[in-house]
Length: 407
Image (cartoon, rainbow, N blue to C red):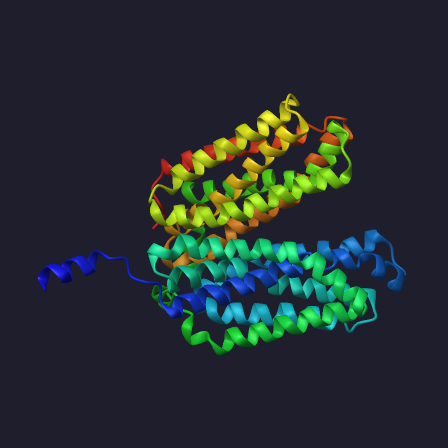
């Protein structure tokens, strides 16, 4: 009996139903967040005609959405550390989905602009809240896979949004399309509120100590957290450059049709989605998450660097980009676990919000830089830039490992 009990104690525990419910709810919210980010893209032609405005004015709506989210990112993280992630997540989701719902009911351009700015405020809560709730609710041995499912669902939101919104706009109109997906978000927010009992929060966060802002500032300016910030900035910039301009680069250099170039981009994104799932399994089976980041980013830098030389044929270039996409996915869960492990437990929301600002900054800056290379008739410079940024990201990991985590 003693032998059996010893053997059973060594067997891995099965993930509980509550943990699966948490992963489902948080990942569903992440899916919705990404879905809303690009929900306007398929509607712009209808909107331009109906509202009698130019595309610059319509582009300003998305700019307002991102600007509001970036501005409120850090306050949201501090609020999560102060009052807990569950309430902040519900309020943010409710604001986001309600704003999208009412955006479909307004006939005014300025009303639409204001509502999407409000939606951006609601959208800023997902990363700090999701990280905190998953870290507190899911057992350590399954956390890598939990983060991988979370990332995968976010990518799925990006992929499904254009098709869904275009179909709804054809069946109804752009306003009804927005209201339908907005109401869907309100329903999901209410479901998450109803299952709040399943969502755990960090126990240390309930001790509201004085000097929280000073403690937060001290943690954020530590070498290790600053390294994570720069890593998120550079790695997201590399990814954003490839996502935004791969089609343009392939058409410009290889002379292929946009159809073939678009298929390559799709293959890159699919490879990244597969990599996320594989990366979650790997992250749960190793404690050397820094080594996972270094190796995968080296492979990404090499593959995009080889593509940048122009010596590959179109199809071999496609394979190189698929390898880069695969490594992009593999690295994500290990990256998330590193941030979670390096952040002080009581300040996880603020740290995640901080590195997410870097992520947003990298995503916003890279397309401008990549577009400059294309304008200078140096399209392959986009791939060189992505390769160089991947190497900088590796150096950030090395710097982070040389310092002690903030306490």
